[in-house]
Length: 191
Image (tube, helix red, strand yellow):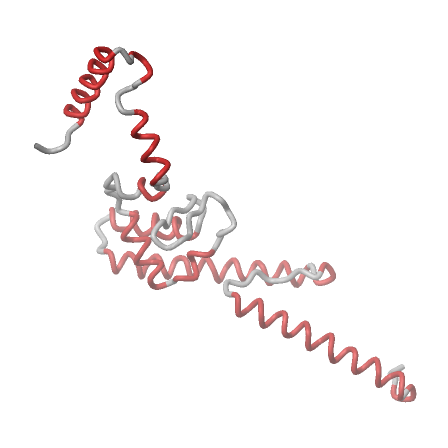
């Protein structure tokens, strides 16, 4: 006979009746002491892991998100310091303003209009590429206007940040060499 909630209720009811008959009354609680012993031996699992296995989620977003992250894995880490974004592999849960969710929702809206998945993906790529280029143009213009403010661009990859840092280090190094040369050869200082 398989396990069911009904059997559990019957067994619990029987245990309580048996405890009353034994004269233990409310101290027995139908096997509560056995549960405490088992919890001491085997600590409970994380509920976070259980939540992903006990229910089936039927949503269009999950396969679209995994296809997008397979092609553009760097998008996973945008906004990774926001506590609402679950960027670890396997969770892929993002806030609605995250670029992944904006991309997938736009792709899904195209698919709802009757366009197949691959065509919707490529159209969404072109739209997002145009938006990206336009925002970069605006950023370059604002950086040019705020030249004295020392604004720095927002990069999409860690290697771009590394290249900027290396360039700053080279500038500091060459400035130091220039200053030392000016100390030794003051006649070459431009007027």
